[in-house]
Image 1 (cartoon, rainbow, N blue to C red):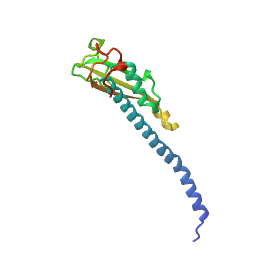
Image 2 (image 1 turned 45 degrees about the vertical axis):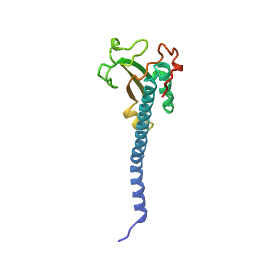
Image 3 (image 1 turned 30 degrees about the vertical axis):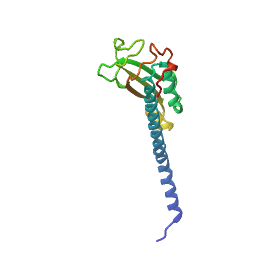
Image 4 (image 1 turned 120 degrees about the horizontal axis):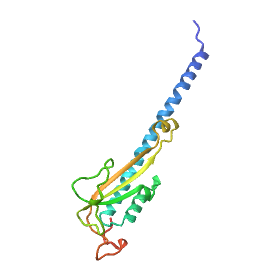
Length: 167
């Protein structure tokens, strides 16, 4: 009985050629999943930081800017961030719920019985070609809801930049 070593090496090469693409797709899929988790974590942190500013300084432009700056690695823009102030009616809007009706909105100087809702959205796309085409772009949304702690600007402080409380 003779063993042909050349045939065994050829069989290994064929097995490797069959398994390698599947292995690479799995590894790249793990990297894509890690990118998605990183993006969502960054988005959540950015919305939270924006809400932290909004509870003591109700200047929407400043809150939006802070949120965008906290998620600089994602390339967010002001259009990706929404900031709304609502009377605290006991219900907290989530990312899947619509925001409360306009008659619940806090107008003008935001009183202490209001909450701020900061939402940040990001369109995530997988880098892996096969996975990117199967999954498609996904919109990640993070929402942070916080009660107002200090109303600013108010009668004594007319410019939001001069608010004495900053996080």
